Amino acid sequence: MPTLPLVFMLIGLHFGRYLLSAGGAWAFFFGWKGNPLTATRRLQPGPFQRADLKRELLASAVTAVLFGTLFGVVFGGSTPVPFVRSGAGAVLEFFGWLGLIVLIHDTYFYWSHRLLHHRLVFPRVHALHHRSTNPSPFAALAFHPVEALMQVIWAVPLSLLVPIPSVVWLAFSFLAIFVNVLGHCGVEPYPLSWQTHPVLKWLNFATMHNRHHVKFDGNFGLYFSFWDRWLKTNNGPLTPALSPLRRERETG
Image (cartoon, rainbow, N blue to C red; front, side, top):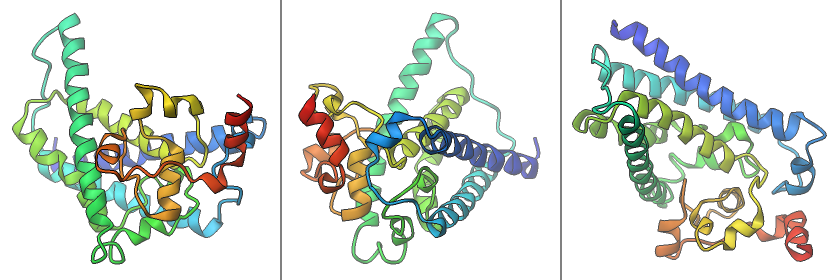
């Protein structure tokens, strides 16, 4: 396939997965007025601001263009990578590669995110994303162009040097945006008991990332809280804004 059509296809893929995930979360939590999760589990009491929503959508569209252009240029004309095994072996291969990519991305995201909060970098780059102190699902890809490149460049050498099947990368792209949208959805969709569960507490939660958007003082993870816990940057949820969740916890 020529590079230019591939670029347009990949731009459409990245923007489409963003709209599907962010728009779906918006419709589920906020468009559907009878959803009890929205009424009782909002992380901040104030409404989303129209200016924030417009900025989030525009910045995310630019991010999708950068993602699609980068991958189109790098992989234009390349042959899709198949599975080595078939049948049940291919299923194991799929989940093994997917788990590896998630762990690598989580590590990269934590450290690159901390770099973005460095006093010399934050005001020039990451401050755009943090203009949404009450982020909506549409804030998931609302990055400065430099940050957008930082968030995707890690995948280029990995995909060029390691024979990860192309289907795994496609599945990962949808998993990544889904987790990102949940972190910005303004609602904690998971039970509070998960945050103290011996195993599930290692996940990252919307309550934690919401605090990050208000306090800027930690909670740098994406999928998991491993690095935040190990390096003492796990600062918990934004407690003052979570009165409905506190009542749920207190009443059981």
